[in-house]
Structure formats: structure tokens, C-alpha cells
Image (tube, rainbow, N blue to C red):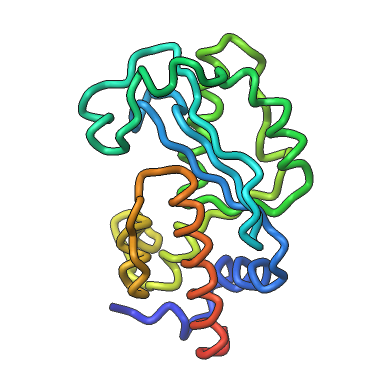
Length: 198
């Protein structure tokens, strides 16, 4: 394993500087598919632990059984929950102008776009609403495993990243639990970065 800390990667440094300010939001979603899915759960919390949003989302398509096995969310559970179109306005208000940490940010944005499309509403340019930070990319640089084929640092799952620091992953694949897991990961990377003078 190559030590990314030695080279002071610019994205990692910027990410840790933002985390050190301790005024950011964390967002996570659970979905019906890894590709052409919809959001079936979404959570947003403050870096101080305050929970702003934690809700199941009524999907317009059924949640496949193999996905239910992963996160435990069923059609019956989301039946009386709001559809994604009802969450767009409060999400915009909540995220507006904020630093937003997401583990695999590109994926969650894609799912937000697909959920809006499925509801038949206008696309929101979420990158223009908040300053998105990808904790997965930051951790990839922190871990420092270079992928010569793709020409960047190798990505790792949130559970694997948490395991690197010995953070328990109980409740993984629940949006709010994963927000809390990502927050702990951010704190651990910041502490390690300070030790290594990132």
C-alpha cells in the first residue's frame, strides 16, 4: 500500500480543511438499484450530529427482492412515505450554499436526478445548490492504493473504509446510519491527517 499522505494530495487536503471547519452536512441514500434505480430512503444530518432529514421515500417502481435483502426496505414500508418530488423543495432549502459530504457523491446525485425524472419533474442542478464533497474520493487518496488502469486512487466501500479505522458498521445500508458512519470516517481521516501533517 502506497502512503498517499506523503504526497499531500490536493483533494484530500481541501477535504480535510473543510472537515476541520466542522460546519458541513452529510447526505446518504438507499436505492432500488445500483444503476437505473430510485431513492427509497434519504437522510441528511449536520456535522454536529443534528438530524435534519430521515425519511423513507415512496418509489414508483417496486423494490426488487435482491435489493430488499441488502437494506431491508420493502414496498410496504415506503407505501405511505412521500414521493421524491415532494422532497425536492425542502432538500434545496436545506442544502443551499452548504458544504455537503457524501460517500460516493456522483452516485447519489445520479439517483436524485433519476428519482426526479421518474416523478416527471424538472431536473435540479444539485451541484449548483451545494458544494459537494466526495468522502469516497478523499478516502481513496488517504488510503493511497493507486489504480494504474483507471489512472486514479482505487475506491473502497464505506464499510471497508470504516473497517480501516476500526469503526463498527452496525446498521450499514440505512441512510441515517451511513451518514453517521461517514461522519466518523471524516473525523478519523482528519485526526490521522493532523498526525501526518497533511
